[in-house]
Image (cartoon, rainbow, N blue to C red; front, side):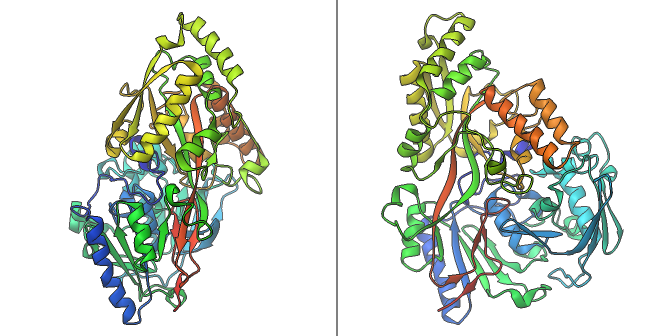
Length: 553
C-alpha cells in the first residue's frame, strides 16, 4: 500500500483490525466486558428486533471510508456506505450507479447515478460526493492509507506523491448524477474497485466541519448504505437499519452488533452460549467442532518475505535453496493442523482470470509440496560457491515475526526446516504486530526475513503482483527484475487473455527468482447460528456480507 498497504500485509488474520492513521475509539475492552456488553443485543432481540452479532479480535479502527486500513474496517464500511457498484460474493451489482459506459480506448468510464439515494441526514447523494471522496483519497494532505489504490485513476500516483494538484485527478462530476472517471491505463477490473471503501462517496461539507474529528464518532459522519452507525465506542460498534436507504425493503435485519473479543477461543465460547451468531474457529479447536463448521478462503496469501538487501538473500540460488527446502505440507500440519492449504505459487488461484478462475486457466506448481531436498542442496552448494562461503552455518539471518503464539509457531517451523535441511542459522525476533507492519517498507534493513502476507483489494492477479514492481512504494522485498517489470508494464496496456498471459509470466518470473517463500492460503473455518440465513463470505474487500441476512426463531 504505498507506504501503508500494510493493510493486508499481515492483516491476513481474518477480521483482525490493524490501526491506521485515523480517529479510533480510545481503547479496546477485555473479553469479560465484551461478553457483558452482549447483553444489550440480547435485550433488543428479546424485544423482537433482528440483531446479527459477531466479533473482531481488535477494535474497528475507523468509520471513515477513505481511512479504512483493514478487512474488519472495510467490512463495516461495506454495510454503511454504498459505492457505485456492490461486490456480492464475486458478482458485481449496481448500487448508487444505474449504469455506465466505457470509451473505446477503455480509459473513460461514465457512470449514471440513481436520483433517489439519500444520506442519513436527508441530503441527496450526488456525483460530487464521489468526486470529492476520490480526490480526498489521493490528496497527500489527507494521508489516506489506501491512497495507492488511486493510482488506477488518471494522474493518481502523481497526485498522491504531491507532484500534481488534486484537481488534476481523473475524476469529475459532469452534473449531479453523472460521474466521469478517467483511468491512467485500461483496467479490466476497475468497476469492481468501485465497490471498495476507498471509492465510496464522502461529504466535503462534513470533512470541513469536523476536520480531524470527522468519522471519530457515530454522529460526526453520515451514511448512505443499508445501515447507519448508532454506536461507535471502544470494544463495540452497533449498526441500525437505515430507514432512508433506497433498497430498504430488502433489508431484514434491524441491526448489527460488533464486539471486540481479543481471544478467538473466548469468541467460540460466546457463540456456544448463544451470545454471538458468528464465530471463527481457531485451528486448535477445529477437531472439537468438526462437522459444525463452514469454511472459505479469505484471500490471505502468507509467505516468508526475503529482503534482497541482505548480502546473502541477494543471491538467487540461496533463495531457491530456501524455497526447495521447505516442506509446505509439514508446515501447515504443524502450524494449523493441516487445515490451511499449502501454497505452491503466489497468486490466490480463486481470483478472476479471463473467463473463469485464474488458477484453473493458469495452473502452476512452482515448488513441490513436500520440498525437494536434492534440489535444495544443489542450489545451496552453488550459492555458497558464489558467496565465497565454506559452510551454510556461516549464514545467519534475522526472522521478524509478530508476537502472537500462532505467528511464533509459524516462524519456528519454517526456521527449523531451513536449519535442518540447509544448515543455515535463523534467529527469530518477535515484535508487536504494529511494529512488524511498520517495517514493511522499501529499503529497510531492520529484517532479513519477515513473516507477512497479502489479501487482494479486487479479484485480479494484479492486486497481488503490483507489490513487487521495482519502483513500487510497497516493494519491501527490495526485489528488482527488469523481466518482471516488463510483464507488469505490458499488462497495463493489454486486455483479455493477452493481459492475463503477461500477469502469469510475471508470477512465474517472481517464483523462478525465488523472490519470496510462499507458504499457505488461509481457508478459514467458522460457525454460524442456525437462526441466521443468507450470510455471505468472500475473499475480496470484506470477509462477511450480512447485508441480506435474516434472523429466524
